[in-house]
Image: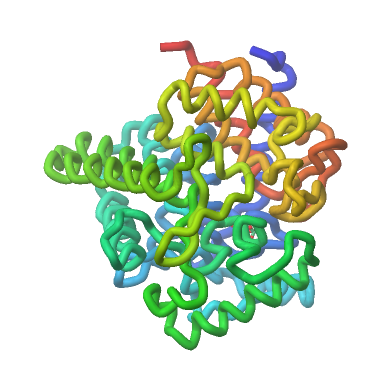
Length: 414
Ligand code: GLC
């Protein structure tokens, strides 16, 4: 392995320490805050990342993390992207946290990429607890059913998002044209236009078809993550002897993967689309690599993507991989939130995509780059791709996914 034992042990220890110090307990629910200073609540995909990292240390705490998400689930199956636990912590922050009124009292009314099944499976791999699979299974099944119905009203097998924040990449340039914003913009301009959208969302009671006139996007990572998680649900269903469900999950995964190819692929890359006629938004972000995570590409398509884009020093290969936006894009900003900086959560998705397609050496380099960022600048929200300087929130948990990358590399090859 590329890291000696001393370094990898130190990373494991610091990751575990961070997960412990960001741990919160409210009303019998245990969960982890992404950053005590900047993100004092529970977030949906963050909690899935936490569960994946925690599974390596304390599977029981990983389970608690997912279990506490269940309390937020809506009757229609949707999991909200935020659960507002711990108002007292918010008070302590004063003006430091800008709260968006997402339309409900205890939770937000939008969602985030569906990573629950992957987190569940990671825990099961560690401790083989079928009871916990059984507990989570119907909830995740309902969530996927919601995404494939309410978020796909025309039955085209792609799940739509109704706000950029649902992608998890709030101000990504993928959404600029939809919001009517230029490639070079301030964070404030972006924030204002997203707030306007939230007003429309509230007016339309967060109803997906209503939002068609304002923001109707089929995002590549969201759907790639859905494909991967549907397949994983197929595996979970088999373990639980739910054979019909297993067949159905696999069929649904195939349909989404097929629809992605039909509507998003353009001979080289998959592009996020906009509107009812699926206009491709050709802005090169890390999203072009996300189909590798879901195994949607052929081996030769993956090779083109890696050789021409991932390893291209003018696009995605600065000193610290992987910038969230291609360095060729006019919108590229190495210090901009989701506009070019390097995020370890994104590296984690790309890492697994590379492993899946047999690019172990590049995956190793990516894990090493992630490790160096943490060693150099600590657990920060994002990093400068050239200097490795830490940016954004402090004590931010996504870096703890390094533990999963190290573990994957150290596992004996099958
Ligand atoms: C930011 C990120 C989002 C994350 C949240 C909490 O809004 O863009 O993906 O879930 O912070 O960490």
